Length: 450
Image (cartoon, rainbow, N blue to C red; front, top):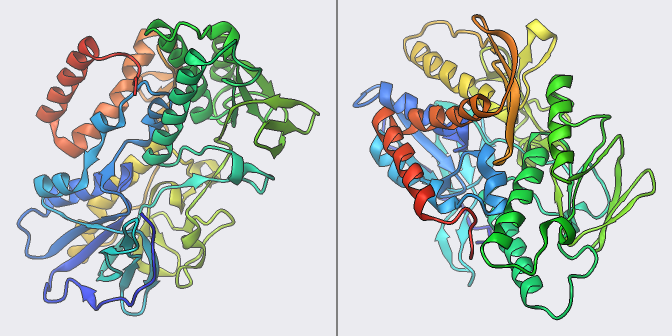
C-alpha cells in the first residue's frame, strides 16, 4: 500500500471524556504496555487506551532473522492487533504517525491507499491526554554508497518475508538451471556483526542445509553458498563481553562462515560489497544490519528534543524533555543510565522493563501522584546460533555474572519469547501456544518451502 495526501478530518475520540492514553507503535514495548494497561483499567471510567500502528500484525522482532531465513513462518507467530485489542479491551487504530500538534494534543496519521490509488484508510487525527512513542528503530545506512539501492533490511516482517522469498527463488533456480551455480550466485554478505547479523548468518547456514535435505539436491551447502559476515569492530558482538564474542566467532567459523572483522564497507553494488581494506566480495544477496536509528519522522516532530539518530530524548520518568504529557520507550528513546554514565541500550529487555514501569506511572498520573524513575536492570544477553548452539551471559543477584551455552542457554533464550507472549496472552494461552509449537515441529518441515 502507498500513502497519499488528503485533508485531515476532525479529531477522533470526541465525546469520550475519559483520559485518553494513546500508544504509537505496536512493537514489544508498545504492545505489552497496551495489554498491561488495559488489564489494569478494564471497565474504567477514568481512562481509555488506544494502540496505533502502521501494520495489522505484530511479530516479536528478535525472531525476524528466522523469518528471513525461512526457518520460521511469520504467519504462524504473527499477532493480529484487532483480535488482541478485542481480547484485552483496548482500541486499535491502523495508520503510520506523520505529525504531532502538541498545543492541541493531537497526532495525525498518514492515509493508506490501495494499489489503484483509492482510499482504504483516510488521514485522521486523534486526541490524547497522554502520548507514548514506541515506534522502535530502523536500520541506519550510515551514508554508505549503494546501501539503499542494493541491500536488504530486516526492520519489519514484510522485509523479512521478501528476503525469504528471494532466497528460496534462488534455491529453485540453482536446482533447475543448466550447469553448476555461477560464482557468488548463492553467496550472501551480511554487514554488521551484532546480534541480528550473527544470528542471521547461523540461520542461513541451517536453511541451506535444510534446502538440500528437502530435495534441492543440486545445492551443495559447503560449495555453493558462502556466507560472509563483516564487522567494523575488531570482534563480533562488540556490545557484549569478550568471551561471548569469542565463543560465537569460533562457532561460526566452525560452520564455514567467513568472518571479516576490523573492516568497513565503503560501497555496495549490484554485484557485491567493497571494503576499506580492498576486498571485493561477490554476492547475490546483501543484508545490512549495521547500526540503527529511530524513524526519520521523529527528527522534526513539533519541536521535541531528539539526538543525531532521531531518538527522542527522555528523562528517568521516560517523559520527553520538553513535554510532560509525552513519553517514549524502547529503541526510539534516548534514556539516561546514570549508573553507567551512558544511555540505555536498544534491547528488547529494556523495552519490556520500560513498559512495566509506564503501567505503574500512568496509574500514578491518573491519581495525581509523582512518577517513579526508570532503573534499568541488565539481565545479560543471549545469542542463538540456530540449531547449532546458543551462547550468552546471564546477570542476576543470585547467579552473579555467568556465561552459559548449549541446552540451558537455548532454554533461557526461548523463555524470553514466552515471557513476551505471557504479557500479551496470559499464562494459559502461552502454554497452549508452546504445545502448538511443539506439535507443529513434528508435522511441518523445518524450512518454509514456498
